[in-house]
Image (cartoon, rainbow, N blue to C red; front, side, top):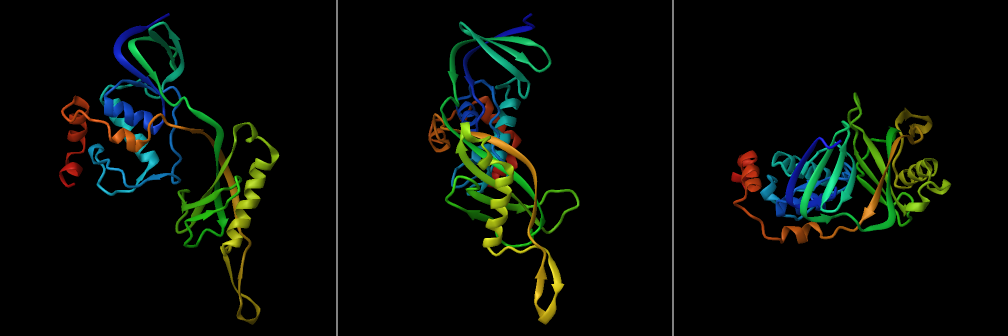
Length: 269
């Protein structure tokens, strides 16, 4: 049973940062069918002028922060439909039937629909998150390798409760989507290679003090696998730079709302 029906002129479907920014710039309602949240601490944006979103010029912006900022602004502007509640979407003629998590069914009638985030490459990014139990105190932030398995290790200050002054790490791999469950791409292999890469880079485990002949001793590097994430590689319809080159309605309601929310930051730029 349909609980509500409403109409829009144009409508977008997507879930990436590019889809959110494109919908923001064009002030078009968006339905997130599959949230494509960037991975925290891994991706950053440099050299993009995002001052109109309340960021400072030349600021290095984590991708997740940009995704969340755009989601917030689109939601506040009433252009992000059913945020965090879409279960299924079914298209019927010139309307969508949306089922939400709370068992509601809503019809959205439209004149023009544009589906975004449709170009997949059959490759997947795998993110393996580790707690470093021994070997987290060093100055290295990034280690890279040419192999698809553990293409890079990204070190970041630990966010575990009660842990201070040490780093944890996420291992990034890039494999074919139909091979992500193969044994050679398993958590065990990733753990082994990550530990070997750290050792080869000169990272040492926790100090055990001074041993015989005045030589300092160290514990072995120990890392504990916490969880694993999968992100399908996507080719966006337009890059963030191309979207930023599109004309923006600086006098539109969404732009006015953004300026009011971030007036202090914008005035200081």
